[in-house]
Amino acid sequence: MRFSINIPNFGDFADAKTVAAVAEAAERTGWDALFVWDHVVHVKSQRRAFGDPWMLLTAAALATKRIKLGTLVTPVARRRPQQLARQVATLDAISGGRVIFGAGLGGPVEDEYGSFGEPTDNVVLAERLDEGLDLLARYWTGEPVTHKGSHYQVDDVALLPPTVQHPRPPVWVAGYWPNKAPMRRAARWDGAVPLFGHESGRRPPSPGEVRELTDFVTGQRDGRDGFDIVVGGVSRPSDGPDLLASLADAGATWWDERQPANGLGKDRLAPVLRRIEQGPPLL
Image (cartoon, rainbow, N blue to C red):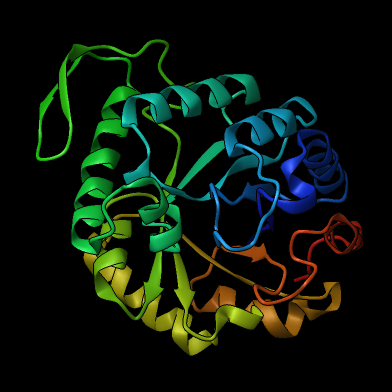
């Protein structure tokens, strides 16, 4: 099992220098990855400073040499795939091939989409997510792309250079479990980031929940190897043997350390840095 730190792209973490310091601390203390949220307003009524996730991750890449970097998650449906492809490929080059791309529908939909006149129908957003993901994978190869889809049109365009990672960076897809549709989508790619209904307080999933999800995704993949199951919550360094060994046995390959979603400190540096300095949980 590998271990990541998860931070929002607002509050204290809207500042690229702060995110660079977080990334440096995470690498120094033995964590394997840093993931950043991708929001533009999150909750519209709450006035906060935000940073662009790709600029924040660029600062993190320049401050580190080893850890993986990415978003959890980017709402592909509210991005232009060609611009997003450029951003990810540039970060992959700067970092020397350390990008993991996390994708999902994103939300809150009324705030993040509706505030800007974007569609808010989940069916439409899911279609744009699927079509956009397919386009990203093609763009990242550097080969010419012609596409006539329901939501995007491309006429003989090659986006160069391709990503450092071939054929592309790993793609993880998030969604609420036990909803099957997002996990079917995830099974077509490289990893699943299941969210569970009780996660507002960041309580970890049970081994039974993880095993159920793992069995479902494995069945969708017809035995293909090389797939990540990313679970997370709030832990202490000493929790590893009791908390994480059973999750790893159930199929989890990553533990994503998160602040309580309903906690006042989720966008503050001090508690996040304190947890980073304690190091990852021990297995």
